[in-house]
Structures are given as structure tokens and as C-alpha cells.
Amino acid sequence: MFKIAVMVSGGGTNLQAIIDRIKDNTIRDVEISVVISNNEGVYALERAKEAGVEGIVISPKSYDNREEFNEALLNAVVERDVDLIVLAGFLVVIPEIMIDKYENRIINVHPSLIPSFCGTGYYGLKVHEAALKRGVKYSGATVHFVDKGTDTGPIILQKPVEVKEDDTPEILQRRIMEEAEWILLPKAIDMIAHSEVEVVDGKVRVIGGLQ
Image (tube, rainbow, N blue to C red; front, side, top):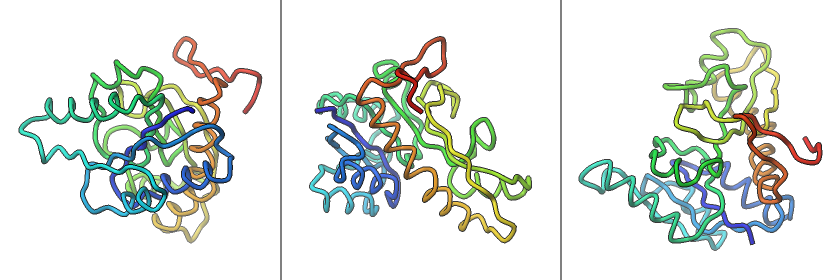
């Protein structure tokens, strides 16, 4: 069985999409070994509990320095022998020691069509506020491997979502979640679990022509 760790900071809607897609076998032969939150009391931990998945909190606030936190975060994943780390709304910078150990085995979902509206400072509603301010006709979501930059890793999947005239950041955020994030993230996990993607020269190549 292919094991994943899901890292969260808030409500866990993307986590729920993963749980549901494992349940209905859209994501095949995969189990969530652990859900890791950097915040106490978030609803994502309730979602994990309801699904019978271990949920733990590892917060930078609980450690004397960032190095201790980074080590604790890495150890939690290593101890559970996971094959893939999934960032599902995890608003903490992933330590370089983890990126080195899990090269091309950490993925993130970002609520825009990278390279638009990404990088430092673009997270949550800020992404959608920027898209509406720019007046784009389409936004969307991207699933990518995580490297040492911010939203700069190899792109696995993207899906455009139409921006409507009366959209608010909150309405656009919800539509992108429903029409893109909750579809792309489970699909990427399933593809990786079945060795259907590889990284060649910094780009993702889909094996077998699947898309």
C-alpha cells in the first residue's frame, strides 16, 4: 500500500477530497498514514479523526527554534515510512532537510495557474484578490512538486476555471476548489502512487500518455 502524509493548517477541504476519493477508489491503493497540522484545534484534525486517520499537531510555537521544529516535522514523516507528502493548505515553509530527503516526493496544490499569482505572499484569499484585481478571465489550480523555491517546482497538473463578472474572492476561491483543486490533487496522488509521472530535466513527464 502506498502511504501518504497530508499536511494541513486549517479546515482541511482538500484533505476531505483525498479521504473521499480514497473511499470511492478514485485514488487506488493509497492510505493516509498521518495528518499533520501546525495548528491546534483546526477542523482538518476532526476530518482525520472521523476517517480513522492519525492526526497530530507539530507547531513551530512548541519548539525553542526553527531547527528543532524542522527536525520534529521530518521525524514524524520518517517514522511513519511514508511514500509521499501532500501539502493541502499547509502554510508553513517546508524545511530544506525535508525537501532533500523527499526529493520529488512532496506535492502542493496552489489556487492559481502557475506562474500567475504565485510565490511569496500569494496564499489563501490573497491569490484570488490578485486575480480579480488583474481582471483575468480564467484562473484555476496547479498541483506541483515542491522544491526549494516558492511555487517553483515541476508542474504535474493544471486546470483552468472561469472567472465571472460578479465574483468575490470568496466565491472564486470556492469555485476553484470545487472545479479544480478537489479534482487535481486526488488525480495527482493516484498518478504518483502508480508511477505514472516522472521528473526529467526539471519537468514532469507523464508515463503512458495519461493526462
